[in-house]
Amino acid sequence: MAFIEWSEALSVKVSEIDRQHKMLIKMINDLSDAMKQGKGKESLGRILNGLIAYTTTHFKNEEDYFQQYGYPEAASHKREHAAFVKKVSEFKTGFEKGKLSVTIETMNFLRDWLQKHIMGTDQKYSEFFNEKGLK
Image (cartoon, rainbow, N blue to C red; front, side, top):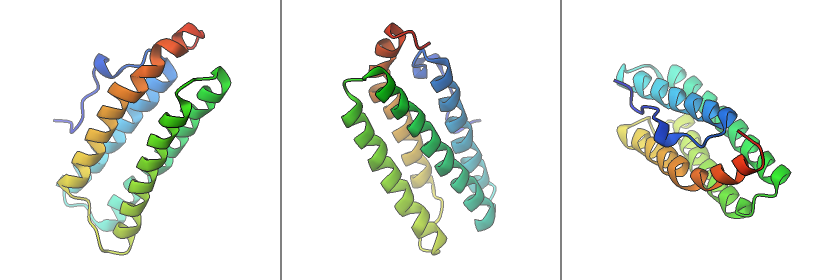
């Protein structure tokens, strides 16, 4: 069973962003599976680095749309992105130094943050982008 399941409740009605969200979910599921299977630090690190890189790309994509379409809540949304990147970067540093490991608490944080962000903050731009022709 997947750690996170995609559902239509997570859709922001913008196909490119939905596709990216599905990829983030897949990557978190891959990290969860690797943790449960007791994969080594190198394997977990590779998955974690990929997740961080893809998240950065996804956030930039959203923020480019904010700029392009003049999204009025861009500043607060970008602050949420920055706070998440800071938290995950701190985790990554601790992981690389051997001070932290991928735990169920880490996985719960990733899942909960992503679901709350998509279903809350991201849903706010759904109608705005759709009205601008972005679907």
